[in-house]
Image (cartoon, rainbow, N blue to C red; front, side, top):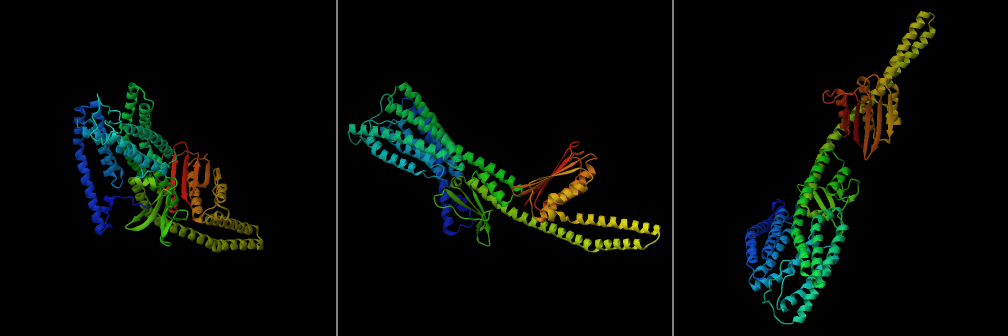
Amino acid sequence: MSINPLSGSFAQALDPRVLGPGRAVAIERRALATRVQRLVAVAVVPMVLVTMWWALTSDYLARPLAAGLYWSYMTAAPLMIGLYWWTRRPASRFGPLLVALAFLTWIVSWQGASSRLAFDVGVLAEAPFWLLTLYLFLAFPMGRVEPRVARWMMAALGIGALATFVPWALLSPVIAGGGPLTSCAPNCPENVLQVGSFSSFAQTAGDAETYISLTLVAAVFVVYLARLLGASRPQRRALMAVAVTSLLFLPAYFAFNFSAWILKLERPTLDVLAWGIVGTRVLLPLGFLVALLQAERFAAGALRALLTRLAGRPTPAHWREAIADALDDRALQLGFWDPATQGFREPSGDVLSAAATGAHRAWVPVDRDGQPVAAMVIDETLTEDPELVAVAVSATLLAVENGALEGELRASRARILEAGHAERRRIERDLHDSAQQRLVALRIHLALMGERLEGAEEREMVASLGLEVDEAIEQLRDLARGLYPQLVGQLGLPAALGAVARRSAMPVRIRDEGLGRHPEALETTVYFCCVECLQNAAKHAGADASVLIRLGASDGRVRFSVEDDGVGFDPATVPRGAGLTNLSDRVAAVGGTLEVRARPGHGTRITGELFV
């Protein structure tokens, strides 16, 4: 299954890529739908007025006011909610279906009319009203009845209505609705639709219809509950709003009809149970409204979450996790367009392909101006939340474009940083091969000269010059080590920092928490950051301060922190110096972040996080 997140005739009509007759047809369909919606909206008031008038002037209803209010609500509520659904999601069939349910309810309300024909038509309308109600339960949210056993039950209900309800209605001298507010007072009118007088057959058909309805209602309840319990997280989220109403209405309906037709309980008990049906039926249309509002709220929350994650410059793997969290679909697959293979590849490198038919997964393309950028395979239930899917598509497109720019910036910074490291290595080699070797040679010559001299004063002078040359050689070696730390490449970052700690004037502890080995540029960056932090601590932390360096790696990131227990400072009042600016620049050059935490009297902690 493949979808466009901006599905529906409205989006198609606005899409400039839809040309010629296809676009004209889409525009015409949208215009027709708009006219129908306006007519339906205008019809609400007269329908409600007719319902109330017929109920209040009825010759047959036992509770005319209650029936009028109930039918008016059951006409207006699904009609208005259906219109809202229809305008918000023109591609969904639930808007028109809810409108159809409202019109069926209005026809059922004709049982309040004084006309015997209208009364009988109202009774007959209860069968399609009941079938459509169950269909809305079982088809939500995908618009098709699931699972297969539910389709068999819907077929059985339809056949049962034709085989039992219709013969009962056409062969009985008097018919009446089965609703809680349709009892006749004192008697129901004669059935003008009667075509025969097979009373025994009509009674048998009526009883059979009752038994079939009760059996299938119980089965629908069990199937719906099992579907809810076995649903995926997106499916369960969509089902819950409607489930709250349907799982209340079905037991209430079963309890009333079982008590009335099987147990044949007394009227006072049935009246109490009847009001249970009224209350739960009132909730029915609200469940669909809540489902739509909940989906819109969830989409808004997903957008906020994705924009927050996007600000952190996530890797492709982390972005897949962000999309999966936002859509609440842990099985989500995300692939990015690979021009070399002309296909989509997941962050792991695997080829992304459409899900197999029947897997209940949907293929969602992400493109820019007709050019493929990425693609997702999501739970097909999410396709009924076009706002949510559009959020994921737009955020992914933004992430890819932002990631490309950020990746280019990172690459540029990394090239500059690597060029700096290469230049440091060249200078270190030049110092070792030229200046340092010449100083060592000079030291040897001074030693040989001192051995040839006979005067003590002259030998002492030469020895003093030799010590100065030794100090110059050691300083040159320190300078070379500062330019490029050889120990980082040879023994690793903890060992290299350990050598720095041993030369430090303040106590320094190093805690390796599973760092491991990483690319040279990254290790060198962390090394210089830690050295810079140690130098800052030595200058500003105080005489009795000590330092703890932590090194670790997890989830594709290298983390380090340098924490001292010195005098600290207030970051809000102390301006950011060149040292911290250099640290931030170093870390940013390899795509990392730096955080500084300090308080007067509580020391300073500098934490860095770099993507591997």
